Image: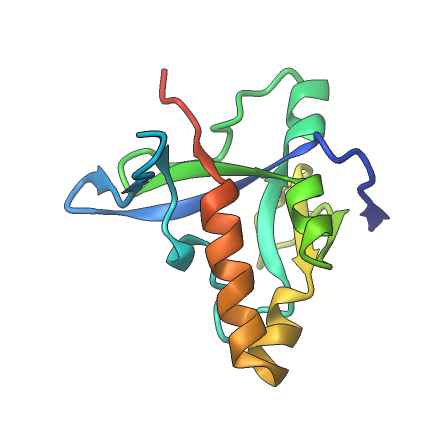
Length: 141
């Protein structure tokens, strides 16, 4: 696991579509579509928020939508800088293939969200809202 330091490096989070359409929020001031706060909620069993690391995808010549089943998901982008501004830590954390788990060489983990969820509900809500506001929707080509 390698800590990410480039504040411009993107972190790609997939989120479920509802009835085939992305669940997005339109910013009232800019009109830009972004992901809802729920897109950044880790599952109860997770120790960190899972993402794909943009720099890893680009180095491999992959699309930002690599591994995203567009029938079920859409993708939102935040940055390492967005995370650091909230006191979160982002890592490139590849998942190696085993008989039980499919591999993902571009996997990343964002630490700090689960800890906030478990200890400070107000901070947790603030983090989710801030990530939502910072997010952009990855264009589907």
